[in-house]
Structure formats: structure tokens, C-alpha cells
Length: 423
Ligand SMILES: *Cc1c(COP(=O)(O)O)cnc(C)c1O
Image 1 (spheres, rainbow, N blue to C red):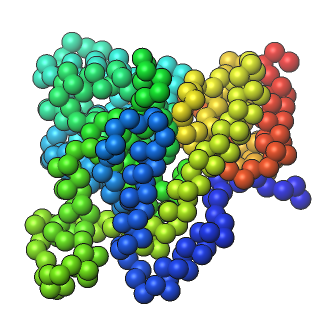
Image 2 (cartoon, rainbow, N blue to C red):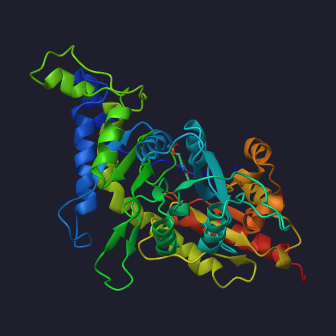
């Protein structure tokens, strides 16, 4: 039996085990001082170094998942029933479902050609249609088109794979059309986007728009098993998220037990949600946060080995990356015109060699729910559908051995040669 290489694997050590035991033995399992410390240390991480000049970091609110965080951030940004929220079809369903939680409508936007990120030109075309009272999508005829129409209120850009792209153009459009920007930063802790003009300054992913949300799901760049963090510099959004993540109650559970006020007294301001993170998980998060830079550099090492192997191979294309990117995924685009096999066949053959691969993402516009709700066809988002048919994600987890990286490269390149169209 050859050794299997999984697609993803968490990086957990003795320190995480000890942190969990510390909490289990403390007598306080739910949200409390570990979670407060996690938020504070997360904020310090975002302040550290010379990259963010201001002493003021963003507000950081830990939650039980990025999905909860996105829901809270949109709610706090004022998204309501009937509003329109624009987002790429090339994403995980969580990005869109939270829009539906609020009764708002999802408007999909195509990705850039040969890429994974929302195309600002496609975004602008959609916004122009909506602001002239037309439906979001053009069916080639003169009429009003099809899909949702109404008031666009927010954009959710997704930093796919930890790669931060097109944000300047997206921000410019958000200003022009007065839209909130909630970043789906699930993949991008920690991704840094340097300023075009001043290299020493810039922004962390998640700290570019009105709010951003990171995920600490099992496979993400740092993990608490399940968990997430909302960040924002907008005090009103922060206050609202804090209240709504714990039932719409005006005092956190922890403060009820530590304040001078009677511990049983609280006021319910809204029918909120139960999205708080338990201390058991925050304790793991604090350790993972300390590892974040090491984990990043381990992923960067793997990514550059792949870049060297695949960037000059005619069978593959890879999306452009920046130095500050978190490299959560390693997406490979197959040049199908050079191969005799489909992406599905190619992926299956890699898996037969004991290497886990994945596809990010099956576009949302071809998923039954969204397809039916908005009457969508595969080619309505042509670039998204084309990228989907040729993309493949390779394993990129900290702790992978050099031999494993070499094996993956060898297997993938040899399969491409074996199924080369011209042979
Ligand atoms: C993982 C993921 C989410 C959701 O994260 P959870 O913490 O699992 O809720 C949202 N968006 C994207 C793009 C993701 O990959």
C-alpha cells in the first residue's frame, strides 16, 4: 500500500491539547475570558509590524463560524428583505445562503477570464443594469432581462484561496453605487494587500471593506475545528454584531457573571442569534494564532514548489499571486486543449494514486436551489463555468513532507504527459 496524502490535514500539536485541557479544568466552557483574549490577540496580530501604521486596530468579534459571522455582518450593515447583494458564483454556498437568511436576493457576478475572482467589469455592467431599473441579467434581447431587480445594497467579494484580487476596482464601484462591502475572508487569514504607491503600508484582507469575516473551520489556514472572526472599523457594526451574536441580549454571558450588576438581569433588545464561540475553541484559536506566521510560511514553501513545477508546463495555468497572499488553496487550471481527458477524469486518476484533490467550487449558479430560484443556465456566467470545468485544487497543508510534495508534482506532471493531445 502506498501512503495516502490527504487533501487537507489540520496542524495541531501539544500546545492545542494543553489549551483545551486548561479550559476543561477551569470550570468555564462557554464564551468567557479565553474568547476575550482570543479577540484581543487577534486584534494585536492585525496591528503588529510596520504594515498597519495606525495604532487603532479593527474591532474583532469571535463567532462560532464564518457563516454566522457573514450573517451577522450583513445584518449589522442593514441588509433587509428584498435588498440585492452581489457576489461571485464561484464560491462556497455559505457566501450566498446568508443573504437568503435575511430575505435579501443574491445577484451573481461572473469571474475574470481564466480566474477565480469577481470581474469588476461584469460587476459594473450588472450595477448599471440594476440602477436603470432592469433585471440583473441580460438575455441578449432588448427587454428588461431576467433575474432579480431592485436596490443593490452590498457586495461580498471572496478572497478565493487567500488570493486578494480586484479590490481597488470593487471599492471604487462600491463608492459610486453606495454599496456596503462585506469581505468573505474565510480563506485569507492572513493575507496582506500592499498599497500601490507606498509599499510599507496596506491592508489586511478583511480590513479593506466595511467588515470582513475569517473562518477557522477544520481545513482553513488556522483552525479551531469550527469558528470565525468578524472584523470591522465601524463602531456601529461592531456593537450590533456583539449584541446579535448572543441572542440580542445587551450583556455578554461573561459580563453577567463578572459585573457588579445582579447576574440574573439582562435586556433583550432584538430577536438575535446564538453565534457565540465557546472558550474551548477560543483556547485552540489562541495557539493557532501564535502559529499563524509559521503555518503561512509552510504553505508558501509548498506553493512555490508547485509554482516552479507548473508555471512553465503547457498543460497547466496558474492564477497570478502576490507576496502577501495567504495561499489557502493551490488552484491549478488544466489547459484542456492540450489534454485528451476531462478535469473529472484527470482528478480521478490523481486520486487513484492516493493523492486527495478537490474542486473549488461547483459554481452556485448551477446548484439546484439557485438555478431554479433565478432561472439560471450554465453559460449565464460563462467564465465561471469555464473555470469550473478546468480547475483542480492540490493539497497544500502545513506539515506536508518534501517527499509528498515531490510525489504530487511527479504524479500530476506525468499524467499530463501521458494524456497529452499530441502524443
Ligand atoms: C469555509 C468557507 C465559508 C464558511 O466558513 P465556516 O467557518 O465553515 O462557516 C465561507 N466562505 C468560504 C469561501 C469558505 O470557504
